[in-house]
Image (cartoon, rainbow, N blue to C red; front, side, top):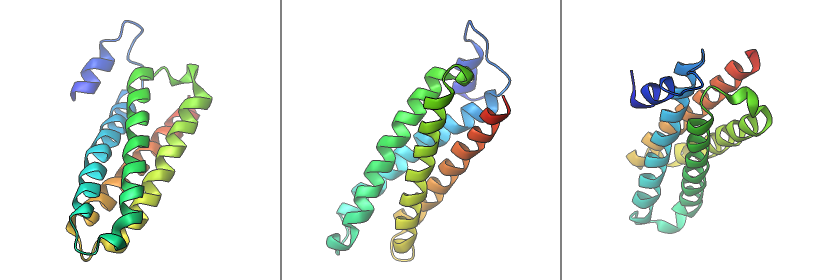
Length: 139
């Protein structure tokens, strides 16, 4: 059991049935924050910095959106039925930011390993947000 699963399972209002989907999404969001932030910093060290400006912007935007999403989902937990519109909108925004960042990083992936890792991480986060949206729609 992950730390966030342990924390959510200890809520006095109950963990709910979707604990794994929620915790996996939270973890993916915070992994993406770390990787996108590190990728943006690595981009700043590249020789052709001018070519990396859009990548840096998308990295930083993605990191901020993932941080907000992970924080809100951790707070809401499996009680998202009480916040269906805002939670779903945030998950859709996070998935969209992750897809955009992944597309940009993929353009640089063959030359920059940090962009390859970032693209992979962003794709995973987008998939976890989309999966949680599906789980939410069944509730």
